[in-house]
Amino acid sequence: MQIGLLLPAGQAQLAAGGTVADIVDIAVRAERLGFDSVWAGDSLSRARVEPLTLLTAVAQATETVRLGTATLIPAYRHPAQAALTLSSLDLVSGGRLILGVGAGFPGRSEHEFDLVGVDFKTRFSYLDDTVTLWKQLWTGHPESFHGKVLHYDWLPEVPRPAQPGGPPVWLGGITPAALRRAGKLYDGWLPYPPDPADYASGLATIREQGRDVTPALFATVHLGGGTAALEEYCQATYQAPLDWVGKVQVMITGGPDEVIAQLRRFAEAGARHILLRIAALDPRDIDHQLAGLAEILSPLRRTLEHESP
Image 1 (spheres, one colour):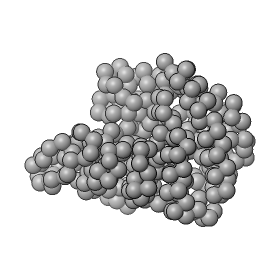
Image 2 (image 1 turned 135 degrees about the vertical axis):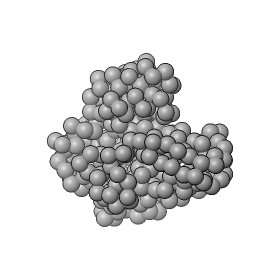
Image 3 (image 1 turned 180 degrees about the vertical axis):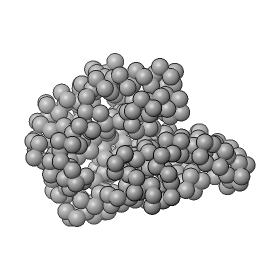
Image 4 (image 1 turned 90 degrees about the vertical axis):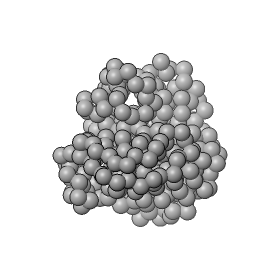
C-alpha cells in the first residue's frame, strides 16, 4: 500500500497566499514525512502551475518520492513534443515519474479542447493514440505513426526515459469504455468514485481484460473540518457545490479514525495506491492538514495493508 499527496498548485491556493516555493517545500516535506508520491494536476480552464514544469522543480528538490500527474490531459500538448518532455522529466527525476492521464470531463472540458484544436468527440481515440505513440517513441525510433486519429509520416527521435519502456501510464475514468481501455493499454487505474462498490466492480472489469494494472484512488480529504470545509473547497476549485462534486468524486472529512475507516473501504475494494488531495486553500490550513495526515500516515498504511485483498 502506497500513499501519495496532491500538491496544492491551483489558482485558488495561490490566491490565498501560496507560492511556488511553498509548493516545492510541501513536496520536500511530504518526502521526509513518508509519503510515497507527490502529484500535480492539469487544466486550462482552472488556472494552476503547469504540472510538468512544477514536477521538474520538485524532481530537483527531492530524492526518492515518486512524481505523478493527476491527471495530465495529453490533448493539451503536441503528442511528439510531449513524449520528449516526459522522457526528459523521467531522466531528470532518475526514473520516478508516473503519468496519470485523462480525456477531460463532459460538460466542462469541451471549450478547452476547442482551444487546442482537438475534436472532443474523438478524445478517447486521441488519448489512446497518444499513449501508444509515446510508448513507441520511448522504446524505439518509429519512422511514422498511423492510429485512429493521429497520423504522422515523420517522427523525431526521443531520448530513452530512465525507466525501461517509459514511465507507467495510469488511466483516469470509470465509464465502461474507460475500464475496457484501461485493461488493454494502460499500466494503472486512477479513478475517484464516491462508492467503494463501484471501485470494486470497475477493478474487476479491468482485470477481466487480463492486464495487470496498479489499482489507485484519488481521494479528497479534510481532517476535522466537516462538510463546510469541503463545500468551500468545491466552490473555490470547481465553482460548484459539494452536492454536485460529491456525486462524482470521493470526498472525505472527519476525525483521524473516521478518515482511516472511509479509506479502508476502498482498500477492501482493491486500491493499492491512494492519492490524497487536501481540501484546503489557505497555506496555514494546508500546513495544519499536512501535519495531521503525517500523524496518521503510519496507522493508515498499516490499516490499509491489512484490509487490502
